[in-house]
Length: 115
Image 1 (cartoon, rainbow, N blue to C red):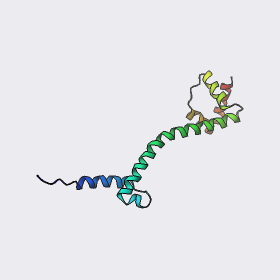
Image 2 (cartoon, one colour):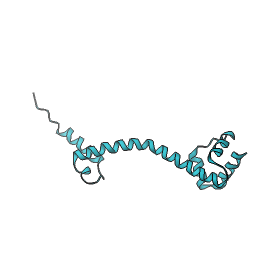
Image 3 (cartoon, helix red, strand yellow):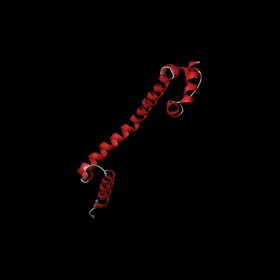
Image 4 (cartoon, one colour):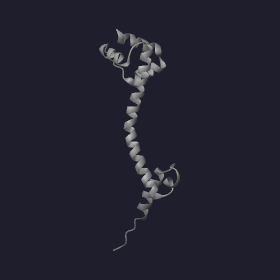
């Protein structure tokens, strides 16, 4: 029976890990064992932060909408309640961009929510 060597597969595995560890600081990008640890940790962070990004953006939009509402003399919760009653179905992302870029249009939405 012939001897099976794994050199090609092992080299390919190492190369894949080292490619992912490019740009890391110090030994994390040069030594295979450190690179494996670093890449594993980085993958965990990236998975977690893909979820966290959604939360972060939603809270940012709410802060922006609230600031624009206060300028127009209404609280955020009253504004959102008024929009629902007026059957205006805009999500927070669109409302926040309106609040930042087009304050006149946002003021009209506030008037609709107050009515």
